[in-house]
Length: 129
Length: 81
Image 1 (cartoon, rainbow over the protein chains, first blue to last red):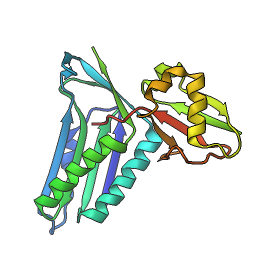
Image 2: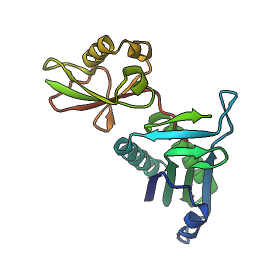
Image 3: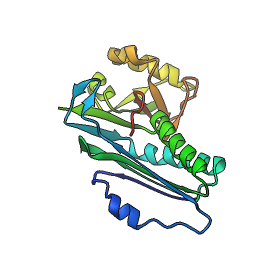
């Protein structure tokens, strides 16, 4: 399974990511998810979220998750980008793409890695006014 | 033996620092270290049940035995995405 991870302070460039997509003939499902900063946090308006990461551990934990993903589903590739630093409301903070032979596997794997990320990957957010 | 401890997220506010060093007895566990840290930084006490702890880049439980030179990180539940 091909894997690509980026933890970046730069805005997520969807067009550049899509232009670099490579899939083989056997793949029938390409799924990508964009997580966007909402304008409220605990029902209070905010202007942005500041993301903090424990970088070395983030990379290690994502790689452990990718290992598990590879064992559970026939995923050909996963690409994941997570912003750190200040991300304004309406801007994406997370981009995940999963390529698999069928949609069921792609949906399941994508949902799973986001759920697991929120459980074990050491990234925190702080709402800003 | 000396253990380097890193704090992340609002644990930095609770302790007033990003990093500290704590001397523990040989054979001490993460649970022992946590008790000492709570004595030094009482505000950590209220969070102890939800505190996540890593040695290096791997999560470890309260019974994990520490060794000289370990780098331990304490932080609240993660919130990526």
